[in-house]
Image (tube, rainbow, N blue to C red):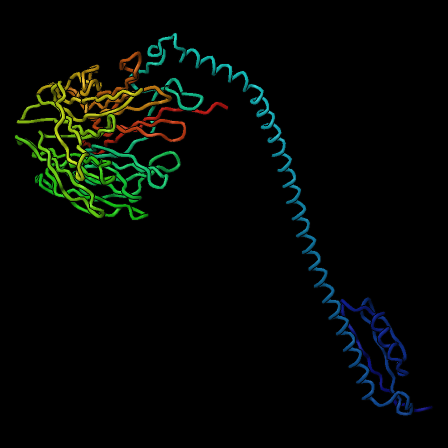
Length: 534
C-alpha cells in the first residue's frame, strides 16, 4: 500500500454574474499541474479539486495553492467590475434612448401644429386676396358718397347736420375733410378754465389749469397722458411762449384764498420738465397774453397780464404790460379798463392790435370791449387806445381770425344784461380802418370761441357755459357758408368755459374745458376723423 498524503482543497464559487465555464477558463489559463478535476454541482456552482502531494514537488507547497486562489479571486472581481461598468453604460444608453423618443414625439407635435398654422395662414391669405379684389368696388362707393355729401349743388348743411348727442354718422376720407366730431377722451378737471396746447421738440403738450393745481399732459400714442403737476392753486389762465429757443409757461393766479392781490408765476422748461422761473404781482389775474413786436431796434417781447380785479369791486383795473429784458419780464406800462377776462393780439397791414374783452364795470355788464394799437415808431413801443366795439355786453373773450384775406373779430358775450345768459354775440369785420358788425350768432352764457379751418373751409366753435336753469347746455359748431355762419353741429358739454383746437395726423380734435365744481367733472375732447384713400 502506497502511502500518500493528500490535501484536497475544495473551492466553491457561487455567483450569478460569473458562470462555471468562465471560472474553468481562468483556472486553465493558470496552467497549474495541480488541477485534477472539476465537478459541476448545479448551474453557476462548480467544485474544483486540487491535490497536493508531499512527494510531488511539481505541485509546490500549500502556499502556492493559496496564491493561485487569490489570483483567481482577483480575476473574478475584475470581471465583476467590468460587468457592472457595462450595466451602467447600458443604463445610460437607455436614458438617452428615452430622451430621444421624447424629442421625436415633441418634434412630431410641433410639425403637426405648424401644419395646422399653415392651413390657417392659407385661409387668411385667401380672405386677403378676396378683400383686395373688392377694393375697386369700395373706392367707387366712397366716391359716390363723397359726391353726394360734398357736391356744390347740394345743400351741405342739411346733408350733414348731426344730432345733438354728438353722434358721428360720417367720417371724412381722402385726407382731412369736414365730417363731424365724435367723443374721444375725458380730461379730469375741477373748476377748469383756460387750456393751452403747445409743441416742444415736436411733442405736443396740454396745460389744463384747475382750482387745486395745473396739470400738464403729453400727447402719446394718440391720446393725452398725465405728465406733470404744477402746484399753483386757483389758476384761471395759462399762456405758452418761446423766446430764443427757450420755452415758458405763464399761469394767471386769480387769488390766494380770498385775497386777490397775489403773485402769478412763470415756469421755464429745463429740458425734462417745467420749473418755476419768475413771479409777477397781479390782482385777480384771469389770463396772460404774450406778443412780439418788430420795432425800429428789432424784435421785442411783451407779456400782458389781464386783471379781473376784486370780486365785486368797481372802477378801473390795471392791466400790466411787461417787457423782456433778456432775462426777465419787467413792467413798463399799465392800461386801465373794466374787469377784463381775455386779451388777444392780431395784425392788420403790419400793424399790431390788442383787444380787451371787458366783462364788467361799475357792477354792470352793459360794457363794451375795446381795441388798442401798438405804436412801433419809437425804440420802446407803447400801446394806445384805438376804438370801442359798438355792441355792449359782458364779454368773456374777443377772438380774432382771418379768412380769405379778411380780418374778423368775435365778441363772445356771456351775459347781455345783468340777468340773462341768452345773447347774440357779434362778429365784426374790418372795413376802412375800423370794425363793423358782420353778423350775430345766438350764444348761451358763452365764454370762448375757437375758429379753425379744414381744407379751406372755415368753422367756428362756441363754448356755451350755461343758461338760466342748467349748466348742461350744448356747445355749437358753426360753418361759414355763403358769407355767413350757419349752425353745423351741436356737442353735449357741461359748464364749458374754454375751447381749443389741435391737429394730429389726418384728424382734428376739439376740446371743451369744464368749469364745474363737481369733483367728478371732466373736460371733453372730440375728434373729427379723417383718412387717406388707399
